[in-house]
Length: 438
Image (cartoon, rainbow, N blue to C red; front, top):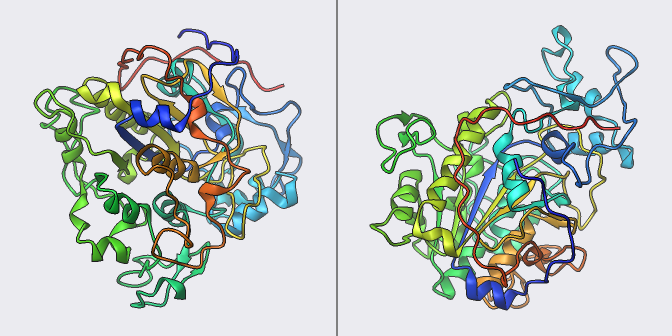
């Protein structure tokens, strides 16, 4: 792998430049990994500090971060209460204690929450960091689990509304929103970004697995059609159908099969992708423990390779991240923007022909920064602001306007010539070992 370049004050990009160069934003959201668990030993990043040792109440003593060669991990609890207990008032020392409270932990030392991977297990992710841009101060939007995080990803808020009540002003903030296992359908009456995209005639799609999908990680050819996965994207990762503005706009058909993504990217020599795309996995390829890390990396690599092999590459920004920390150790205390978060730190990567090569972005960012980037590129800076968006709701904060969050455009250099694609093997050989923390 090439060595990462130094952060030598590359030119600052602007939203205007981004809107001139970027026609497609593709957000790939994986599951349940903290920044330290994937990039804690990445050179130059704000990684695992020396002399960390987290208390182990069950076995006595403490557990230091350690390299884990296993493809399957256990992780830990990752709801709102676990987030608070892991952080423990800023001590960042509750991870092992929380994992050991899980059922079945009495027969196994549930300490892999303190483990980390490096290029030996995730060489492609490290290659993307070395060749494009890594964000080492990216936080989940909510201090909780997947569902509120995916609500934030499309709407900048996690809320609960009275069932069947389509008045957004009756909704209220929550870190534990209702989901399909609790009642047939949630009512998400507040405003999501597709409302603004529709008004501005900006195209969008939300791609999910719908039961029988091409397994391109196994058969990575131009068609990707011979081997199929038979599983669906869980509803908690696919919240848009429950938004009343999506229903009222008649846009439920924009939530489409992943097969449609492959077809659109390979559209007879032209890019058929919409301006804005979200892609969510099935459990098998999500990296959500106990799903295998290698399968998730292969799936993501295939998505990225598909874009890189298509005409879409030259005008696309791929935003790759993980929705929450999954119980895995991270040493950075999240900021408190409002009652819902931020959540713990997660990996963030920008893969684009205009991403700064080998750049590490140290700004404080969250997945709300994705919304801000979309709004800047396609909506001339319009925001999900109840005072201006024409569909008021009682959200406590317009996250995209928070002065504490940085600007995603700083990961780009639009003065450079467009970078060539970096086609990687879905199942690559291991990369080199990293230097242990401390």
